[in-house]
Image (cartoon, rainbow, N blue to C red; front, side):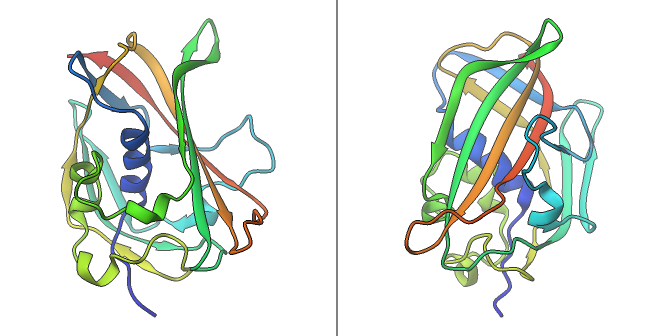
Length: 203
C-alpha cells in the first residue's frame, strides 16, 4: 500500500481557503479556539466525526500566544470508503451572535475535492499541500485509503485571510462536511462533519 503524506488540518483549512476567494480589501486573522482544532457537529446527529475519518493520536497541535499553530506529527486515515470514490466537500462559515450560530455569506462546495489537491496554482497550496514531503509519490492520492499514514513536516500555521466582503470580528466556525460517492454517483452512507471554531480579528 502506498503511503500518503498529507495532513488532515491542511485539508480542512485548504477547503475553507479554496472556497472563499481572497480580495484586495481587508485582512483578517483567524485564531482557533481549541488547541485540538476540531469540534463535533452537535447540531447534525447521524453524521460521523473526525475520529471515523482519521486517527489523530500522533497529530501534534500547539497554539502559540499569538494564535498561530505549531503543527507536526502524522495521522492515519480510517475513512471506510474506496480509493476510487469521488470526494465532495461542503463548507459553511457561521457566526455566533445572540446566543446562537447564524449563517454568513460565505459558503461553497467542491464536488471533486481530490482532483486538484496537489495543484500549486490553487490558493490554498501555501497553507497546506506545500508541506507534503513526498508530493511526487502521492500526487494522485487523496484521503480515501484506510490505513494510509499521513506525515507532514513541522511548520507554523498562521491563518491570514483576505475577504471580498469584510467579516465583522467575533466568534465564527467553519462547518466542513465530507461526502463520498461511488463510480455510479451513488452517495455512500454516513457523511463526516467537522467544525473548526475560532475568533476572527481584524489586523
